[in-house]
Image (tube, rainbow, N blue to C red):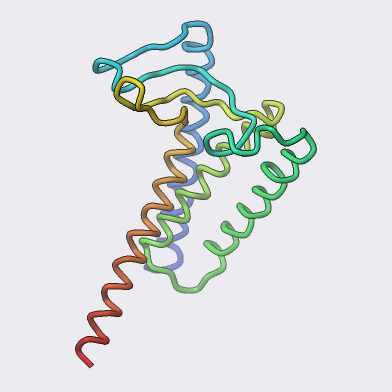
Length: 170
């Protein structure tokens, strides 16, 4: 994939997902904040407003405010800059990798915006599960991050199988 096509693809994914994430959180604040839970498909999908001062599954929420800031805001900001620079400066990159990293970058930016403008908290509002077996509460940014990581894992497995196939034929 040419650099200019990759740049357009990455910018489209990042801008589109950050806007979708922030719009969905704005709607969650307006619609869900005072409503409790809203169930769909017999409770398979559940919408409920929540704030999270920690990371994934509230990890780090018990840290003091300063530690949370440095770990979840400042350090994450540095990581996002490194990912963005990698996407911008790397000469050649498989489109699969560019999409995966753009998803991770977009999700990270979406949650970083929350941390910066919502007193260190992230807005969450989605939950999936059956009866008491449920996921944690998450948002669009979290879905983007998990999707990007899943793509990287799938790609690594595919590359590993190719390597095994090449070695088997030698």
